[in-house]
Structures are given as C-alpha cells and as structure tokens.
Image (tube, rainbow, N blue to C red; front, side, top):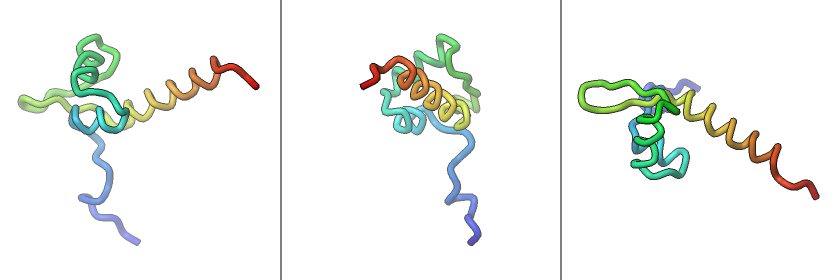
Length: 72
C-alpha cells in the first residue's frame, strides 16, 4: 500500500505539533528552543522543529524515567 505525502508524518513540526506530540504547552516548547535544548529552523516567521529530535527527546525521557523509577 502506498502512502501519499499528505498522509505521512511531516519531517518538520510546527511548535503546536511538537507541543501536542509531547503534551507540552507551546510556550514551554518555545522555552526549550530559546535555551538551546531543542534545535529549530526558522522558515519565514515560523519555527519548525525536526520530528526526529522530538522523538529522540521523548525516548530519552522514557529511558531516564525507567532508570530512576523504584523497582518493585
């Protein structure tokens, strides 16, 4: 089955898309970008955040949580 370009996940996310993916506020995403914790590209007047970076950030957060959570 072939997937059209419009059905694929975009490689570059808007701030709102990145925020929704991580369950963060848009202002928190802007802060992460401003502090240099997340890379972002400026295209015109908008910021775009690489999807792979957001997914890597989520994976790292999960790994940290798994390492620090109490074992039962």
